[in-house]
Length: 97
Image (cartoon, rainbow, N blue to C red; front, side, top):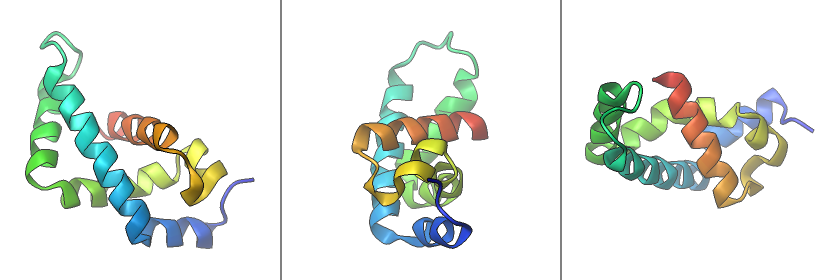
């Protein structure tokens, strides 16, 4: 069952959840650094990765609302496992880029 609006809002503000999103963002940034330059949208992805490594809290704040609205997060809430959260973060970043 999907989170209510109130639960979604609370999750967006949850410091432990935000910290997990931050780790997933940094992990994805590291992945982007290693992808070939021929990857579609590579320059904007590299720009995001660089900004994330310099200011991870800023990237986390930008990405967290979209992550919370991901169907897997809506289903599991804060109990989503690390692999599921990583996927939700990557899907969210790709939507925003």
